[in-house]
Image 1 (cartoon, rainbow, N blue to C red):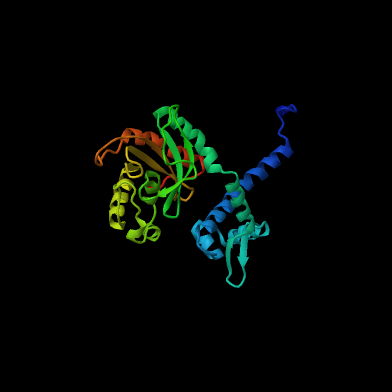
Image 2 (image 1 turned 90 degrees about the vertical axis):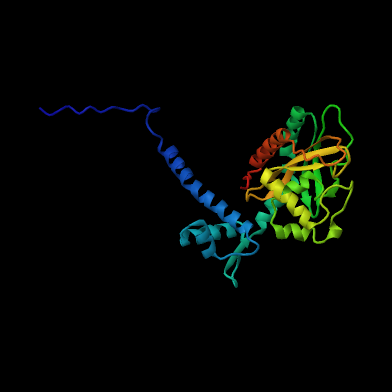
Length: 284
């Protein structure tokens, strides 16, 4: 006797939908291509000038054919520009338009504000978000406790970066040559209260100590009777792009040498969260 072969009929719910299967396969196959395309854009954005396809392939460990395909697609969409005489590629107008739209939406401030509010509620002091603007610290956001204190560091105010905790939190993570370009001579070292670094060698010593520590401190450098603690925020390339700062009342006849590590840990936590929210990565 022949063995009876049982055939199990699948119901409609059990039977795979070929159309859905095909869509899923196409979707999953496009994800690596998308990631590779974004990696190419990041590479183009990180370089000071156009680069060759061979450089892109080598840096990203891509096959040459894949590299040319990605660059062609990006160029057709306006996100990359090909320079035929140089046989190189750079960012296209569409990438610039995206960057401009990003800035118009004020994402850094929008993402930072609730974090600063949370920080203020936790520590009871004024919190700021600041960025480096040339040799100055520019304050973009300020959140205050229920009983605010009058501070000079309001939104839109610019202060000498070498005196502020926020400015030095960023400066400490910049290359030495860039710091020197921002503050090239003793004349650039404005003094407000008689405290703080007076020249480039003194600033470098302060920045080295603050980089090792992980946060910046100013004690009466901006306004007598007030101190600040700041931690840097990093972009996707690990570069310092802003700083979260807490300012509080502190009276000391001379610089006390305090660094407020407990408060700094709270500030660093929110700075790290903002770094994550903007897609950044913390530098080593």
